[in-house]
Length: 74
Image (cartoon, rainbow, N blue to C red):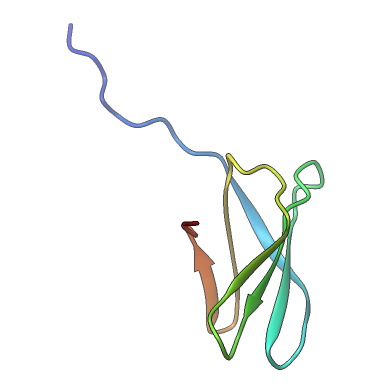
């Protein structure tokens, strides 16, 4: 019997915009147990993590023309 090489599904949480200015938007994870909060730059691409939350979970969200998904940290 061959081993199943299908990758396991990755857990994901939705991020919702809680506030914004003309240059930045604050996104908060809707899963209350997680607590992830990030600020995304609008005019200048940047991401600042305020609260890490569950770092093992994939987070995604959008605001009109601005969306983020699969953020890689170096």
